Figure 1 (cartoon, rainbow, N blue to C red):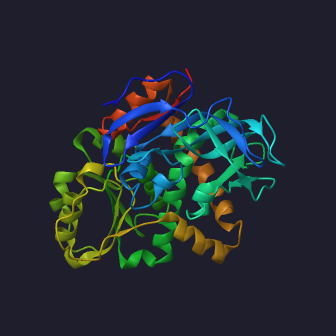
Figure 2 (tube, rainbow, N blue to C red; figure 1 turned 60 degrees about the vertical axis):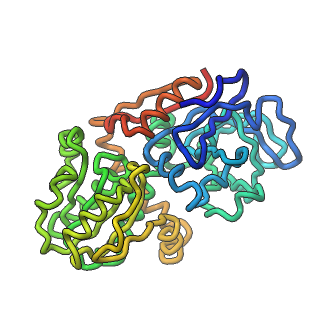
Figure 3 (cartoon, helix red, strand yellow; figure 1 turned 45 degrees about the vertical axis):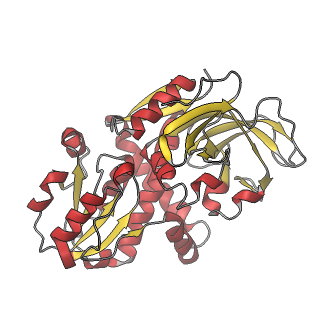
Length: 371
């Protein structure tokens, strides 16, 4: 539900941190006439993706400090999103009006940034309150210099690139650890875009290396099977049908405590590694007491990125990711339709659908607060 009428002018979309169902539009912290200090720039947020990943940002907003990126009034938060924006004012050397950037934005019309570490590829937002967060989220890429950028595929980039980075790093992490001795990987919320990216990568390793098992709701079984990268797709109430004498890894995209408990009790000591990645079932995160098998942990992609940057050099992750990204882009047109929405009402509608689990897995939502 909204908490107030939609005001006129530039907007920020904010949600209650303790009740994600409560949200409202407020006058933007920045607008077209915002006066900048030396070194600052004003970006007009052109369009952004909204996926279940953004619900995860909100669900883990306090635990993972996602609310800290774009502060709001007490008790409220601004959910970060991935998208594109254009520089409309600049008092920063090296950043020109008219340049277009890809990166992490608020659900807003405008945002003020303070570029630092400006280079050919882009800049890092040097505003003080963001410095405690992982630098991955503070980097903004010039579309003119980004080797992955394709003007015709901006929607796919915004919708899937940040999710695919997570998928890529989980796949690499599991391989780096020899799958913890497991022979199968179980993914919940298997129809989600992050799960699909991981399943796509795991499937390339071959069934002999690891069987890829997807768990999803009954209504998404046919769609998930049609993706072509799961060796087996089951509904959540079919967990007991899985052979429990096979060592497995569980990658939890849903965040449902009952599902996690059912899997751990079913596989017992054969649960070799268990990690939480997402929270599509954000309101069902309660656990079921002490669980057998590996202790569930939260997977944090930037930690593996940091390790691989040391292992592979400063460009190693980007180079390997680019190769896999190009392979991944190929079949997207076969299953994902991009749905564009403009204006506050469209943003509110998509937010509600995603929060309540009503979004279709075969669609990707691209939004803008501008009509």
